[in-house]
Image (cartoon, rainbow, N blue to C red; front, top):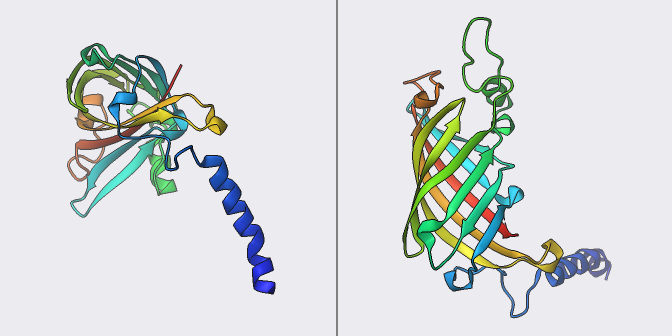
Length: 214
């Protein structure tokens, strides 16, 4: 009996959370169904949009970190996907890794008369603006310009539709939309050459991007 009484509060909390999140018909509100996507303008969901970057570290391990708190917009018409526009801003100053020492090094101030090893103490936000979208079913090739560390270069991303639907009422009830994307850049192209070739010049990108309709 004591065991039941001890477990009861946890069961009640779990049940309440399930009831709040549950949607009519059950399951998650977002579905991998492009037919539910509607035309219009969308805003990046900064709490659920991440940019993962990965480098080869000394040939021993693939090491990765994250950029979050992304902001921006998407204009989309399912009947004219080639006209879609993406414009996102990535706060480089909020880069994070699993190592506090490495994170600090990424943002370490430049020594007098020298460039910073990586981004420096007060890096400008990075920005990606699409210039062309080529759709192929639920996938698309997105060409655009990436500005990073004061340098702008063309970058191509391979994007895939992930899901769409109406957000739960407790989260605003707006239409939601999400994609994944991959790509790669050479960090030396953007003036970040520290440690090459011991740490790879190529940086592989994996992106999860969530949007809410305006």
